[in-house]
Image (cartoon, rainbow, N blue to C red; front, side, top):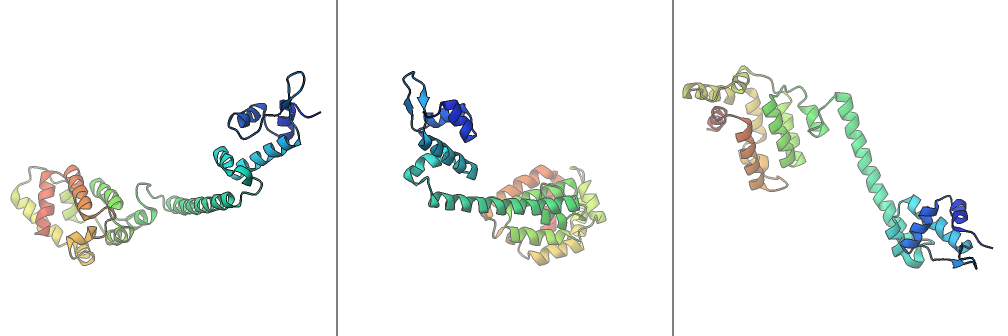
Length: 238
């Protein structure tokens, strides 16, 4: 006698709309029709629907199932490929959970890699310095970023740094030079020079290239600091 569309959908645990969609995309052959014009589905149709359902439950798309052709009874290659994709997804999700655990445990901000955020948590950076570090995180290699963040672990609000943060744009030359000399003598700057004897070494292994890193840093510095502060930074290198 066969089954109607609704009976087939009920047996397969799906909907009439889904059965019709399988027809539309070419995954399910049209059945014969009874004398009254109603469709009559048989066992092969039920088996096919159950196979499609099982493969979609496993994660294959209808397009992938359609491309399997006669291999859908045991599509080994497609399933192995899916398994590899799932393994990669699980690994990524595990990394995310590890990061989340660190962020939650340390109440760390989310604009920096968790390990870097942990290193500078006690650094008491100014908003400008912290924003600069966030940009560096996008420019430097992970190894170089970790070395840079390590130098910030013992960073503290030296009086010279406090003065630099509040330095007005119209500060006179004597003030700028004096501030540059005091900042150059800070222990923190000694750590920076020890970690990166050559200033360009900070960007030597930048993933997108040295020139791109330098150009970006210049743009960021100009936006974050006023002209007097930029002048002090230049004098510090002199």
